Length: 385
Image (cartoon, rainbow, N blue to C red):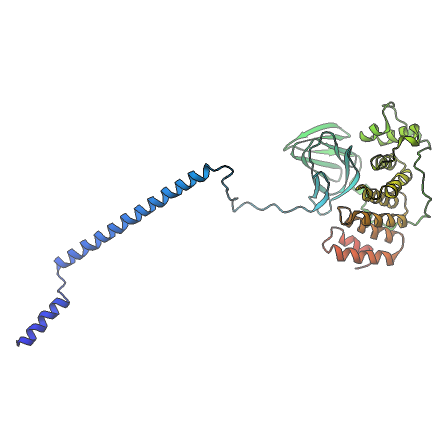
């Protein structure tokens, strides 16, 4: 071999040495040492990160006002928002549990709150106030609140009451019972749900001639059955607060017109006594006095709305009722009564045979409340369908 060929062969051996068993063992050993070194580095890094996490959690845990937040289980279903039916200034509220839930205001004042469940099921969240009784009337069942969250539902021949928080006292035909948190009971009633039709679905009420404004004095004698047999020494206000409206009406008649003070609270209570005591015609004057003499009082819209209901549902005077509901809307100015007042105004104009007025008010309702709870009835009564 020439000298040039020999040098080329030696250079090739240096560039690509032969792969012998000894060389393979050396390479495997080197690779193993590298893997072990990287494994130790990763382990040390994990330990260091864990220590930092524990230290951070300890430091945050000692900070005042810092609380751990645990996410809700993914399987838990979110609670759907319930439509609001009524919001009172003290924070008490009423929400619908069924699509046909309907609650009407009987009386709202410093001395107490009384509502009536007209249909469906609703939940009542009440701000505790021992000096301000909160009552819900469902047919002949009365639920008196002791500061709580509870539900009331109308069934065909019973009233279902369930307590979510606090306690309630239920007065029914079978007696009185107190329900505590987590308890529910069904109370039989003497009247069926069919006995109280929805005014929105009823036939138009015949138009009667408007009556002149009544004087606030309640002078006529009540019917013999209305004479109180007990608590004759109690004032009419006390009897009314105990929901003995028939007895309160008889007592108010006996005490004379001067017993009603010229205040929104007293006038509203006197109107409730007349409405619920069997003489709704005598409720007109005190309600009109609240509207006329106390127009800027926050209870004036309630007086106008109650007057509209009395004229429409109890006295058969839908044209006057429509005007009262219109007044309630103006005085409420977007409050809790505004939407219902507009819907009842449509109903009243339709009952009075004023199709054009009902149509105009129905268009206004559909524009202002495209998702309103009474939209279907308003569209039907206003001729929009």
